[in-house]
Length: 116
Image 1: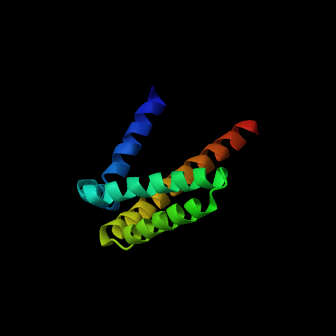
Image 2: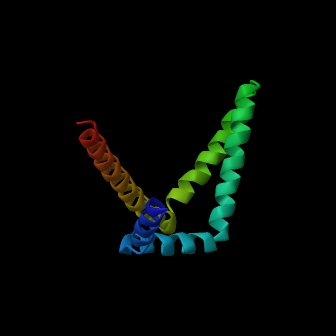
Image 3: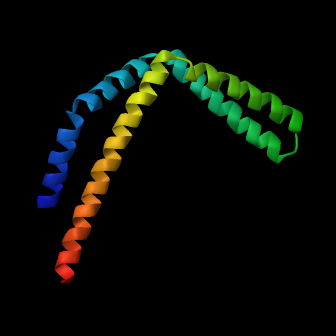
């Protein structure tokens, strides 16, 4: 129970960091843009179809659907909101990697000390 409380406290502190809150705000704005999500879903469908066409040897259909998916992906990446989202996401991912690494490092030190 003690560790669960500590993890909960750590999680709460992380959630209230400025750039985590910035990420949540951008994510919320992105979710409100249904056209972006619809485009993303269409892109995923085209990518899935392209893989199927490739597997069954229909190379012209594969090429066409793959190009259509790439076109949508390119337009999504050019969206300022999507770009901002991925920048904020990278910041949060970096934080998670750092925290995870620090916890792992400190646990290893404790384990090494216990072995001595």
